[in-house]
Length: 90
Image (cartoon, rainbow, N blue to C red):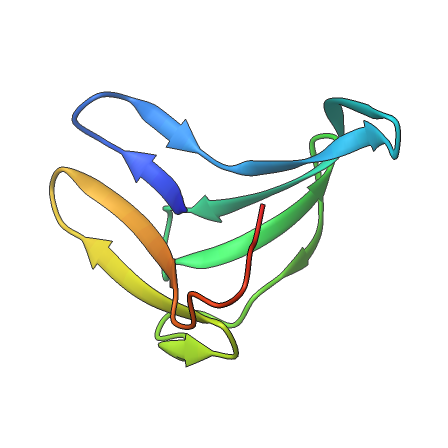
């Protein structure tokens, strides 16, 4: 999974909650990287920021996932890969 801003293409990759347990439509919550200042993840409810992560650098490996952070002229993204392929994630 890749989260962040592709500056070259103008794409913001983020995740959203489902509308409900039975409706996978876009819900009220989203997680995005704020590319201004020191990179941080922000949790939004609608357009209001309600929580944020610590500034970069984040831990590079937490539990089942390993993250790789890229900040260059083309993009500011965090890419996640599963470190143990015996787990099925979706």
